[in-house]
Length: 398
Image (cartoon, rainbow, N blue to C red; front, side):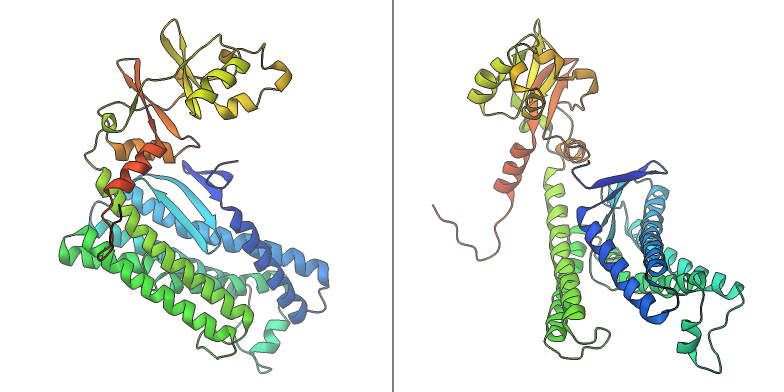
């Protein structure tokens, strides 16, 4: 289990993950489609309707993956690497190593996703037409839809829904694709990424809170264009708005943090070697002496003064209690050759990317094969907290 989500697989060298919230929306989409198919095609029966709804949901999220892979491939074209793609409650997100290098890169990366969604939408409808169907009938479109077979129904649903995905992502609310297009344009005009991000983030938050207000109005029975009225539509739209507003604010804060970390070397924040454990120390002694007294969650392991690995509280917990006084740390530690490390002169931003890419909270700091310190996420977080400028008008207290 990956801390950033459930690992589905690896495609084109990119990890595909699913946030736990994705399970909820997958079930909701499947349930909703099952009701639509049962009502629209009563002759099918409940079982086939559930099966088709499940297939439709899977293809829906596969379409979102295609959308995100379009972003990822465009990013690679501009020399950027994408570590992973994560499906979550409201779609998907590509985990880029750093910000785009130029406004042009931002623009083409942003529009690649909607373009892929539009292409999928047109493609599904085109395949439906190839099966010999038309969009009109003397009996009316509604009658035609009820007479479609399962495959045609699936194709005719996937076509418009991909177009909707493309259109929604072009809403100029950062960090949606449309908001990134807006940031690219502002970046090109101002030649200042921070200023462009701040303005695009403000637009994104404004649009997000507008969605929240519209959703709440629909929740209480007001008919809102493109939303309708009722508790389900209203609550869903309000949640989308809240997510968009929050994401816009977090994206701007993240840019500020990475900007502060640029040019700061690891040695500024690393902890010089303190408590350590010998490789032959038993798990019991390590727990009662080293870990309990130091308060650390991971400690370096030494053998004749040489750094040979790292052991964490999680490693100790994996050993049955009745074996604590017989099992040596050497048997449960992570060997040094398997560890991700950093160097004193490496930039904090690069080191932080290493920490974020794996379920770890510390990096051994190595110089010429020797351990010289430990870099911990909590120390980086504290440094950022101390260096973030307080909001205007915020009074400090002593």
